[in-house]
Image (cartoon, rainbow over all chains, first blue to last red):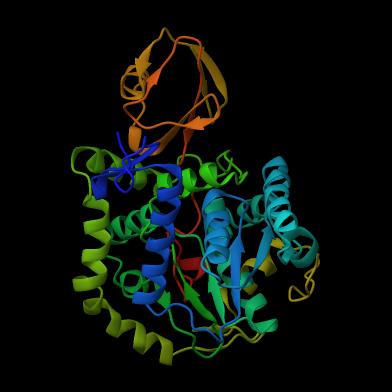
Length: 310
Length: 81
């Protein structure tokens, strides 16, 4: 295989683009894809303050690195989930990346700052750990951004993540979630803008980007994620993609271009129906938001989560 | 060649030389879900791996949270399915 740009030896192929790249031109490819996503969806404006949700994995560290490459200043926030050695190793990768590049990494630790961990929350609620994890991340990243005057929360969701979420939502015809699945969720009362600049890159590309750029990341899979539905959808999509390269991108971008608007009206109605949580003030359709109800069930001694650390 | 697999980490001895594509087929690993790193260098699918190479097959699939990614109105706990 030869690099599509310079005809030198290729080290990575991207079948949906029918292309292969050398290391240098693959980095350019990633930069262009992220720049295109940011520009076409108007994700970030020059006056924005950007907070990257950093997990220590390939996607979030690639995103942070690509922001630097594109000249977009961004601080990171790591959320300690309390998942044993896995969380300990993950924060190590995040700290090393930030320290080596002189970047600001904030940390919130669920056990210390909120009073529960993902395993304890899963046990207390008798729900899948991924459910408590996703809920906690969405709430705490947003709360931290608002409390520290960040206008944008950027997450490392990639093409594979979004295609898998879309497949799950379509299989269940979950019209509420279909209405919300967008690369940008605009800022509204109680919410910072949320953006997904990696939607034009597959996870094989973000991993390759990290390897080429010499970024050490958490390669191990979360021990609590095994066998979950989301990973099953990814495996199914990979089988389809192997037979027909480009299907994942066509599925996701076809939805965003031609399908999403059919579901978005419902979201507008729901947004008007939100008011402040009586405990934390976050927007919620009920009296107490889902995160505060989770905390009430799972936490021993809740503490203020908004203070910066590290 | 020595082949290192992850999640869980384990090592295999596989006779070389052979291409990356042939190695992945032999191990029944989807090329969509891994990177192949030979002697610390990322290699493309047509690369030929020598018998003395050390090859890491690194999975790229991750995630678990955010089955409902992008949600701004989390499903009430009592109504969870």
